[in-house]
Image (tube, rainbow, N blue to C red; front, side, top):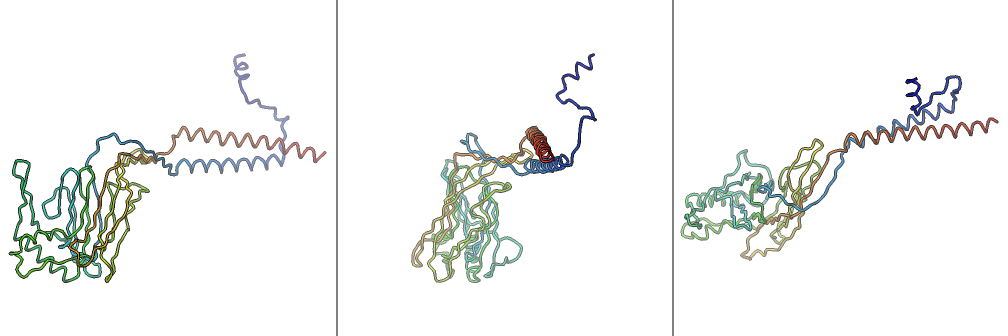
Length: 341
């Protein structure tokens, strides 16, 4: 009796075998329905495994670490001894590649007139400047004269061979608005020492043609786009020289991988501006990269939907196919019956 009571709860009544009848049109409907179910199942499975990128923006309320900048640029007409790099920010920090700067892990490689690297070793800029603190919040610049003269000799030699320079590496800067100044302005040091110049002369380089292999702020994640990567500006001989400026808005970004790992990095947008430099002008050619930090943080999430959500969709697909197939079979059976009669 207990077994009979439980059987009454079944929603799937089983007819006796002698009361069922299999037809050829029913088999065709069944095969079509099974094929449709398999197709939809594979489609849902592919949708579950493929990339599901969800991006959202919010106000950045966290106190984040320092900013890491990656750079890889080629200057085809500026020798490594002539090329100078400064980092300045609104907090008053000023670092250079000739003053023992901390956090500046930049490397220079000499290039010949055809753009091929000269040797395997990097070029080391003579350390001719060093800021000495006086213990009262101030400081004075100490000039190493032998290193300065060595630097001047290398400038003349590389400029005479029409060399170029590849600047590659990374630097850690404060998380405030700042500027990366690529120029030849360090020659002003020698302007202050005319009595030491002797027969030397300061090369005047105005052609700041450059090719940007990479400018990024932090690690890379799949699908990330850096607008300046692959960008170049070439000044043909005989044309007017220009100073280049890039205004960059850096946006903090948090990337969540499919496995839930978090990568903190930055995206950015850029605006370009250039100004002409007459050949007789006292202005110095330069490439300036001005960056500022956005107060908005972008969250990029590549995690797929939950497995439970996947099971719900599977049940809906399979159940819907069988329901439609059963209804189709009834209609086909009714139509066939009418035609036979």
